[in-house]
Length: 386
Image (cartoon, rainbow, N blue to C red):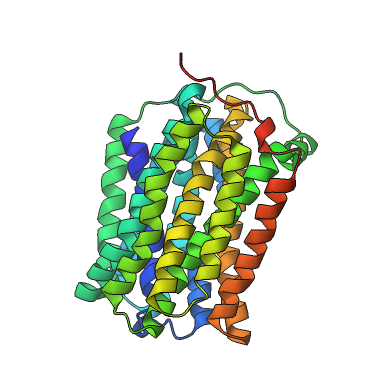
């Protein structure tokens, strides 16, 4: 399992290590909030288009080769900017990294489900989310140090080495999981399955969580600069967000496996905490940034493992890659749409109103989650061990 956790760490560290430090380095062609929003959305936009395709491919040929190919491609895309070292190639490298992550991210989550019994899915996805959150935590902080020491080129060098190392480790340690035979599925069958509430409810929650996470990592540093904080300080402040998520996810997974938490109550509580965090981001100064980071982190920490367990529990094993890829599509729509929404509102008014717009949308979903009678709580829960 550890190479899979390392793959999760790689995509999180790469995505947010760069994203959290773009806003503080205008010399790298990040000259406005709209340009920053575009660069943040580019990585996720590639994932939106390709994750469902790679998820289906993982079901067809096995998740392991798709995982390995994605990791190798991620290392190559990172090396591209190291070699070119120009603002124009920054866009190409981010696009390549996003395309590569769209291959190994759903493959890793599919393997987490396949290699663990249903009774331990909460713990497994909680641990997987924990290591991704460690990547989110170290990304802004260590990324800030690397950019301060050697610019974005040094950060991309580290990512190229990391991607290659994890690819070698996964190639040696991850067992081959053969593709399972499956009945023929029509487009109508797929549409019905993806339109069911057991898929839509957790996917909507996951999409909202990633939107808030991306906005927090990308735009809280902008608020930090306005409050007079330096690069390393803003990176450390934003790392509070991912640190809280890292602490909450394993606990949420264990609570779900032990029957102390349901997916409905956990997802509703997570959305509420996330909305409160976005509202706190509207407050001026360091206090608002810290509160926002802590609450968004705790909210996304609740949502992420519970959402993935709900999806895995309601999906036949032979369709896991397709389901995870489709769910990741929803997440990346949120991950790309969140920064674009905040940037668009901020360009018309101020960044404070951008945070407020996303907080309002998240709060509406939280109310709907509490009020909905037919919810993801109808998903069969993993049996607890006696």
